[in-house]
Length: 220
Image (cartoon, rainbow, N blue to C red; front, side, top):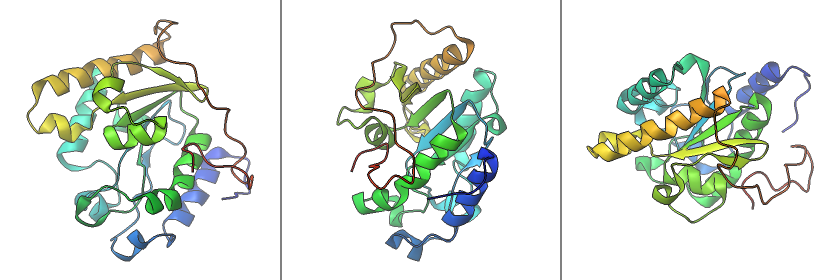
């Protein structure tokens, strides 16, 4: 995925244009439209969900409906707005029946997420839910054990938290846990995070995106 502008914002727009006509996997056959991402292309905070749902597929925007409204409420509690952050998903097209993305679909799509991370270059990445957290951290440990920490990750911080849908299912403790995780985001942005919080990265930084040996941020 090679772009020809030195301006990261323009480069991101070029990549989005490519993604909107992508046919690299079979999800292209059933989508209404590609849901590439939305928000500030120079954001300090980038959110990664799993995949678009029906409403997102119809509108072309990630996290709309009740989950999106709750996300906006949590952002407001740490003095952020939806327009100030960037929101995307692991895969950019809706899987049939809202099932989990399959490995070959992730492989086909992960270069888009990698490029979004490289070009936006946020200070904090927030993974929403079990699926995106396991993929991005390359772990089989569940979200319940991983959340509540800000991890040092690829020269920035990663904060795993629950998907808003989990809080909407009526588990009050999930919402309180999410509030704590969002407070970690604010601590990172304000420079108030304890220096011993998180873990050291165990993998080298990513190579240029056009390097033929590059495996991507998320392994093979």
